[in-house]
Amino acid sequence: MEITPDAIIYFQWNGIHLNATIVFTWVVMIVLVLISWLATKDLKVGHDISRWQIALEVIITYIRQQIKEITRQNPDQFIPFLGSLFLFISISNLLAIVPGYHPPTSSLSTTAALAVCVFFAIPIFGIAKVGVKNYLKQYLEPSVLMLPFNIIGELSRTLALAVRLFGNIMSGTLIAGILLIIAPLFLPIIMQVLGLLIGQIQAYIFTVLATVYIASATQAEGELYQKNNNEGSEKNE
Image (cartoon, rainbow, N blue to C red; front, side, top):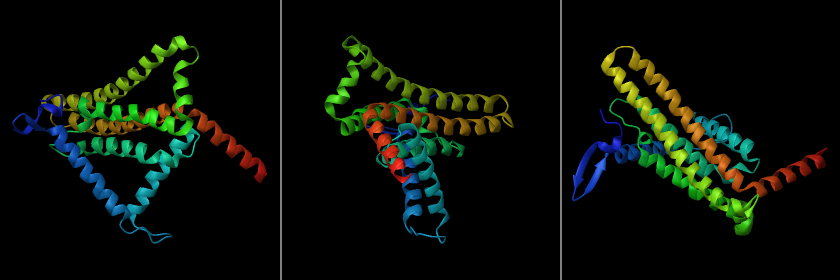
């Protein structure tokens, strides 16, 4: 039994390895593109809309509401990035029900890549919202002596994001495989169901943590957005 899909090599040539992580990442990307195409190829307004469009609107509405509650900002600007993160991790873990499939999220290289995306997204969103000066100023708070600790904190939470997702998905896959050898009838089915549930929870936790980190970097913009909303509410009253 292979602990990580990185160890499963399908093709190699002159030092170039095509392992299960890459192959099943492509599979997940194809599935996401196919679902997106089915959901958006015939967009309509009103009651005569397809089931794919209904499912897409439900997912987007849910993600939008979650981001708005956490950031207290206009969520539309974050949906392309955070929504893609959630859908990729969610579909990656959901496809584990297919025999022979190895979730890319059980590879540390995949989870590290996702965490690095979050690592770079935080300053990009932060600088775009509050400017370079105000964003960098956060590293000097509450005192300039905290600068190295704040930098270490940025790096450590990126590492924690990668390890948390990798550890949970990898351990679930490993335990299901062990139980399949020990008791091949019932326990693997139970563990498979629990694994799917844990996979969706981990997709949610990863996205929520990324949202919290981005929200902290755009805090000044969030306060302005909240202030504008309050002023708008007072005018309406």
